[in-house]
Length: 383
Image (tube, rainbow, N blue to C red; front, side, top):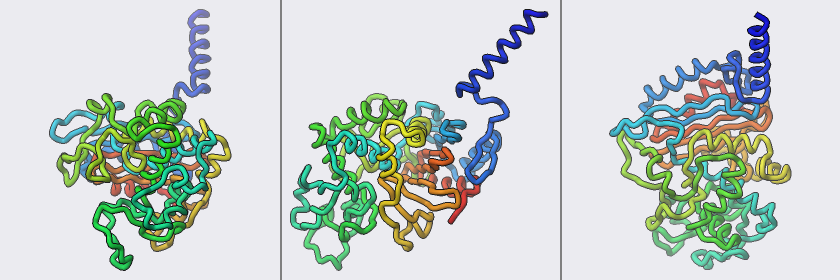
């Protein structure tokens, strides 16, 4: 009897120790607690996700929730392809779309800390932009302006119709400046230019810049699956995109007609899944890799988002930091970003205090609707 009692005490001690060390989530903690105070059991979250996937017709989903700076809930659900019906698993890789931008901003800040890039030095001094030499305003553009979307560049030259009022004698696909640098205007073109500057600074090219990202960011943050360019793992683990309920024929996110999968895509080519991206978010919360000063720059208001802009009018994103949107709440700043590559949609939300957040990836065009339903289910506060 004594030996049994001793073993019981020993097992109790080990269990308690593992809980304290974060290795085991005790049964009473099988829940998600939002900053607004809503408590959601894992069973309730499971039920919500299954229902929404069915209602919206979403093929696959990768999602993770963070409480107190740790991932407390993670699911990989559905199918990678509605034709093959292969199940999504923890190694299934999704297009992150514009969730690429916050992570690239983090990468840029590492280069700033290393003394190789000045946030406020005009980028042309690192690498000229020949296509814009005809417009001297491009020489005002800095890395800070790229990351807070104040370059004045179009989102993408091929998809942004040129305003005839600009009286520019250029054809579709030619680069141009849409508005005066210094005013808010969401731009992937700016990120593309900065990625070329990053490659130049590090004596690399867009063909091998991802190798540096792996060393400086992905590995230190514990992001097991996160790449800005194609690799062998993606050949067998990337899920198929879907649009209009059908498998998309698009093989890779492109912003230029001659683009391929081998080049680093800072604005929308990140391939990852929820656990890996959550490692980035928890790294932010715990101030990993970067200094407190760099986090302060990333997360403070850099520019106001106009009230009439869709980000503000529809979502309440009233300001932008470096690579991330900012929503004001009674509980403090809520940091947000969404992603839309058409047949892949995604989103993330996080608070620095409390250390709470979530991220999701979908392989279809229903992710935006899912995000709105998730926000309602979580009873997220609106300003």
